Image 1: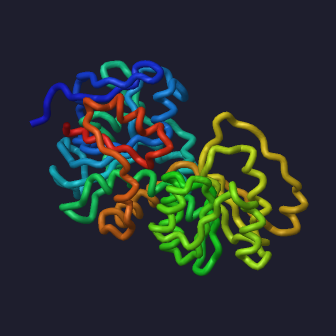
Image 2 (image 1 turned 180 degrees about the vertical axis):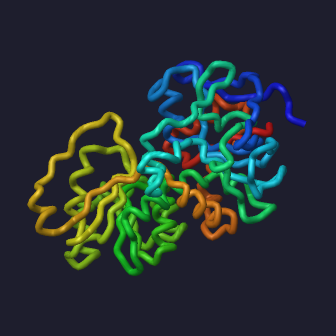
Image 3 (image 1 turned 120 degrees about the vertical axis):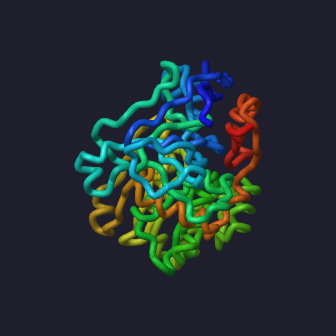
Length: 349
């Protein structure tokens, strides 16, 4: 039975999170009602917690997993009530040029906004979400681990990044940053047959990368990382660089770490924003590619359900700590610590 009221976590003021009781959303024709069970705290939620990005109060959360709770009449789906699923909380219009071309992560159209008793939110830290059936993805196993599958959204983001870089077998891939996104890039690059080098000053993160399969780690505090990359590639440079850190002053340096025809992906956003000067002739004569990667596509989400549902990649070590909804304040505080990769909130408790 679906309750009339549900619990949800709101960021109500800078550095303040609390649980409130709000009206449970009702799914309409074309939607599903999903009972969310797990939610991870992403860097976006961390910025919201500090008072950035959105107007408060706000109901955050978008890295989620759960089970189908209700299927309204008129919603056509192969899913059944109780099936384990992941949810793409960011909607896209499905009708703009970007959506038609399969780049729905770059949607320019209008999408449905969600409100909870008048308060806006992405909705991932609520116990229920009503959302288009096209944004709900079946997991391949009925006994799928929902803790693990909550990583679908960040994994899908990195899969899109891999696609943009077109990582090939035997290529030298450099990942700048050993945070959670750098670690996921490392795991996925190994799956694509690359030799992975990860640049990270923190010893614990370097050790994690090696344990998870990275071939080489570089401490940029002990050497010139660009020169070391050149040494390790016999002077050629890397075929691909994934830049995953919020350090604008380094963004230009790693263009020099690329081989001819190399590709650099600026994966994360920069806060505060700024400009990166470069010499266009160096791009012209070397045919290097400079690109970015923003949010996941529907295709990438589907790929993530397979990787996580079948446990084709291991993300369990990236769950640093687990908390209940009542412990949301501590969960947000710990998520902001460099000691953690991902903090998980159990929405059933």
